[in-house]
Amino acid sequence: MNALHDRHGALADAMGDLGRKARDASRSLATIDGDAKTKALHAVAAALRNATHHILTANAADVEAAAARGLSAAMIDRLTLDSPAIEAIAASVEAIADQDDPVGAVLETWTQPNGLRFRKVGVPIGVIGMIYESRPNVTADAAALCVKSGNAVILRGGSEAVQSNRAILKAVQHGLRVGTMPENAVQLVGTQDRAAVGHLLGGLDGKIDLIIPRGGKGLVNRVQTDARVPVLAHLDGLNHTYVHSAADLGMAQSVILNAKLRRPGVCGATETVLVDRNIAKGFVPDLVLALTDAGCEVRADAAAMELSDGLVAANDTDFDTEHLAPVLNLAVVDDLDAALAHIDRHGSGHTDAIITADADAAQIFLDRVDSAIVMHNASTQFADGGEFGFGAEIGIATGRLHARGPVGAQQLTSYKYQVSGDGTSRQ
Image (cartoon, rainbow, N blue to C red; front, top):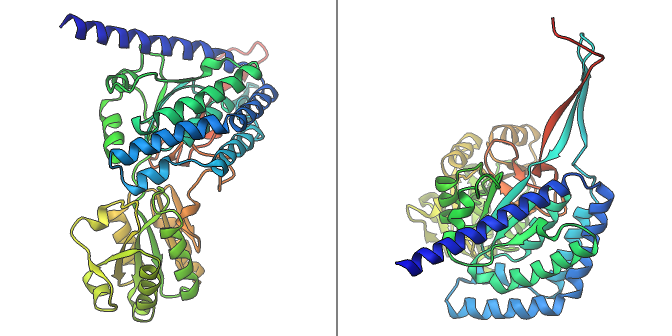
């Protein structure tokens, strides 16, 4: 009993120390000018490139352990790094570095009739707790985005990437030191004890201002249930591509193959294709053949099953499942309204797309689908902060408050009002 008490006490002390260091670092970061942050992040990118061998050695150990534990192919794909991946991570850090500084940006100005002058100015959030699974690149992306936006961050990665995350953090902190930034601006929870997550969710005695979870449904649900501080959630990517009756069918097939199979394990992958009944007979057989030839299993509703061989009957849960694998749901719908109803019933508010040459139908879809990202004639795999010009993203926010869609540096700021008068008194 005493040993257990001592262990819990030691963990509480260690987590509290992380929180205090992060708060101190956040106060320093909030006053550092944009040029200094840009230079520091370029130093971080250089440090990541210089540490390529060390990071890949650590990652190989993680991948080997993940395979031994029987992790899924999608999970291992998300975990695995190679030299081009390290270069891409470093390039993302540079892209973030070179963006305009969101801190201090004047968002609005106006003057009231009484002479008071108002400015709405971007400010950091403070200290962010980031809880994530699998993807080690998130360590560098989150670090760069938080530093750029003037926030300190405490990272808690999954056990499957522990060696990779530590190696990346070492490079990031080296770059921050070279750039004369407080290295405690980016910290990693030093234990995989699950109780550490509970301490983060509790807010570390007021030191955490925002929690961002990025991972599976179980992780996000726990964070949303247990957090005592605001949460910016990244939920499942139950994404749809709807092929409208006015679609270019060649374009539709090409986009769907990319949206599903470019990287099936990413949150932007299409999980369900909806096909308008008016063009289904002439489209579904060719689409299914192309998908199955590419190694994709297609699980279909009753209407689609009548149109093609090589289909598997969808069960009751398939249309509510983020497969993150070469498995695609297929349904035939009567019209645009039916497609919208299906997405409303089964979607997760992440990313949904329509393929059509009818501009009016496209606009109805774009207006009525209540998702963070809605697309026309484009692959849902573009649901990525880098593709939006953000350099990277800390996650895809699927809620409706504060930030929505890819969360970049600008979305990691809040604002305050600066009000100036001339000895102005209120009557």
